[in-house]
Amino acid sequence: MTIEVWQFVLYLILCLIAGLAIGFFGARALMKREMEKNPPVNEAMIRAMFSQMGRKPSEAQIRAVMNSMKKNM
Image (tube, rainbow, N blue to C red):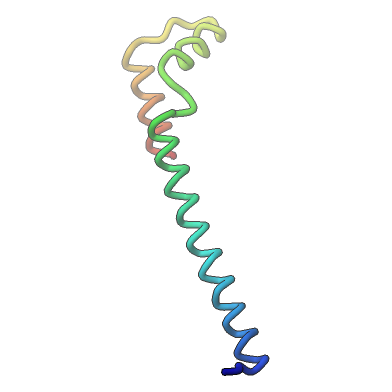
C-alpha cells in the first residue's frame, strides 16, 4: 500500500492543524482552571495596595475591586 506525495502532505497538514487546535483549547482550559484555583490577586493584596496608597479601604471597596477583576478575567 503506497500513498502519493500530495496525500502525505495533506495528512501532515491536517494532523498539524488538529494538534494545534487540541493543544490551544487544552492549554486554555488548563489555564482557566488554574486561575480559578489560584487567583493572581486576593483580598489581602488589595488591602495592601490600598494601604500603600495611604487609604483605609472599606469592605465594599474591596468587594467592588474583586468583582471587577473577576468580571474582566
